Image (cartoon, rainbow, N blue to C red):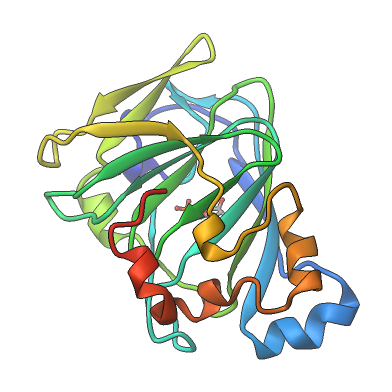
Length: 222
Ligand SMILES: O=P(O)(O)OC[C@H]1O[C@](O)(CO)[C@@H](O)[C@@H]1O
């Protein structure tokens, strides 16, 4: 964590986040395994990391052996306020950089190959979310750590987040927005993502077979 923080000596909670991986109905287990789909629940501590909010380190989803490609991830916010900072690459030129805000009931989709980190926007309230990802996931950290994090650092001030540019990257515009409804990926409105899977087991094929959706990933707007 420290190598991606603005202040490498920042103090914060001992446990920053916890993850219950591979949860779901027992009746769905065989299907989830055969389609390489994984559902997890994640909780982020309340508090802060020095001047920064509670957040993840930042990573890129590596090429999954089953998908033969980097894979996307679908978050559904349950409690707290979530911000995902995502950028097209972790190269010196990060490409487009977005900050996406979501509240309980809203979704955020991280497309394949993008570097991203998850931020809990409220210091007094834990962030809790569910997420679909591929079972044989893997994370790449090296490039992000070598740039001391992602292209911007979130700074917490009285529960307001401001953004500080990370000068290890080429200077880039930060695009800040609320999450979209992702109807282009067949996501239904106002229905929990696990229920969407139980009603249509193919609903998250775009997570496990991302190469079939390249027209969506190219020029994706989160
Ligand atoms: O390894 P990192 O970058 O700290 O990120 C871990 C986070 O990534 C996630 O998989 C979401 O991208 C969360 O489940 C977890 O909180």
